Image 1 (cartoon, rainbow, N blue to C red):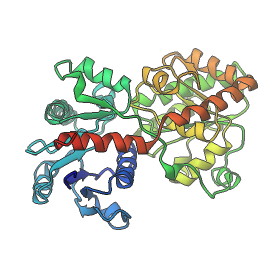
Image 2 (image 1 turned 90 degrees about the vertical axis):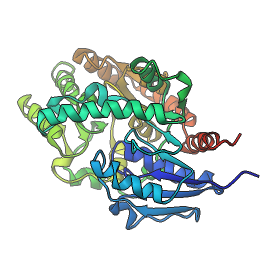
Image 3 (image 1 turned 135 degrees about the horizontal axis):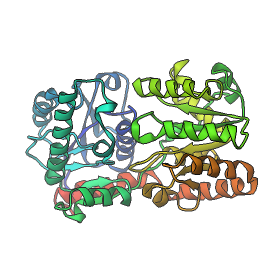
Length: 384
């Protein structure tokens, strides 16, 4: 009989954007697939106060320590050690570097390595460069220390092999992601949501932050062509968070004279997940111009809501979406505008992509991700 182990999970990112979506989904689905082992799950205060597990083997512990901080590397480390886990699972790269025990990581991408520049921060530039240097060291150490590193796509695995060729290829294990069940539906009426944000149909939708690699400024430039050359009458709705990147994007929109055509709802109100679902139900097309992704979930969520998608032709997208989407060159504003317009006017292609999109969804399931992850835990712990 398999021994019962104690597994600790650093879930401080739980339910936040980016790595938090992954953390939330994998923790919740591990709780569904593993009823044998004991789990110690470390949460920050905002989640700890209201989240409850239905699996009695999962125990939550308060760990209100900032990400990428010295307290993460010191006080949090001692807290983890006090529970004497048989294995620590960190679904990110920010491991406690002095942790002496067995370790499994899930590093979703190397975007910070490629696209985080001094233009993308407000902190003192020398300190920023120092932090980026430390980031690279921690990534290398995390890969060296981990029994396995779980990746969400072969494109991400290839990225690791290119940047860190000394790390053996079998260190990286593929486990595709899926759609968060909490993002599948909403009781909100799309008409009410559109009215709240003063948005009229038709519109193109893009969901994601305005970070450098998301390439939204290029999308705005392409949309300008779509409006002026191809005479598109609708608008472009960009849903993300309110930060300095969104403010820069807003400035570009004003410079282009597109204030009435390109809409950032976050400047009116924080957009809730239920409202994002309502936007997906009401949109004409989904567009996503990202230059780099580890898995790229938002087009998958769009496909669930029967939205034809026009997305960038990066390797990750071609791997995950195959022929279920329309591709464009994300570095070429004319090509973006042309391909979106081709999809807008071809109703038969839209129907074909909706059908293929729904079929594509069958390839991705968080339960399978959790099963692969649990299997890695057992192998790390010496179980066959």
